[in-house]
Image (cartoon, rainbow, N blue to C red; front, side):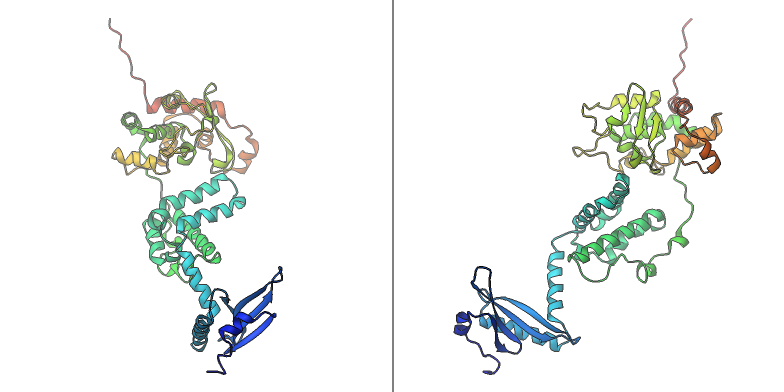
Length: 406
């Protein structure tokens, strides 16, 4: 043992000159000179890793780790080498596991979004990321330590929507994979990525091509709009008013719930949706019918222009993306979707009015598929759209006839 344990506690305390002092078995006391001229003593273990590489492993400061303890640590490391384990890599993995317990998946997702702020095409792109995670991932494993997110959790988030919302499910899987990759690179988790598709989830889930079918959003037949809107008008709350406004303007959920007072010109009865919130990144003007204006009249008009027209429960936040769907469920119409009312509007315009189809398509902010037509169209048919939206509002909320007594 004397040939192995060459140093003594007195030798360690007295070592001042820079250099390596061997204890045996690859363990050294390393003395260096600091910028202030004082000696720094630390422990160093040299060994040959299982893959043949010569490695040096720090075992701490001699001021904190005494000779007996460092010999025990060196012995444990040598045993790992004999077992085919690289002690440096094993220690790094252990530290990653400890750090992984510190951050939950939601925290990693928020950090990922913040670090990629400059790469988003527009504000809507980031909103889509956040909304997808908020609705489908966070309720399942948002608060779980990111190092513990596995296949079971990922599948629990994907299974309910894989065959019904295939595009959303595919994007959700990719976004989870990207966040978990980020967490691994930052040292918050180890191991394979449970959201990886190739050679992994593709074995457990049907491919998008096989599961994807043309599915139309459940829509209310336009002939039933008036009684439905009468029932909706009786519903209390901000989400009910937002749903009314969304229907009267034939807009999308995200466009409505994120509407701000600064976008609305009450005098001109016009709502201008900025390009970054549109599916097609182009500013969209919406003529507000008397019916839509009546909804705005029911909402407290904030003096701060950036406040949301339809505020959520949390200060400074809009309604959640699910708020309008929950209103439909409370009305006993969980069979419908908010987006489906755009189809109701389009069917009504085609079958009950003489407005040209391009006016209805412009009202829906659809892109013109005919390139020749698109090249010649310069305006947004705003005046004609105002007539159309006024007619739609009157159809949804017909004014009762008045019989005069004779």
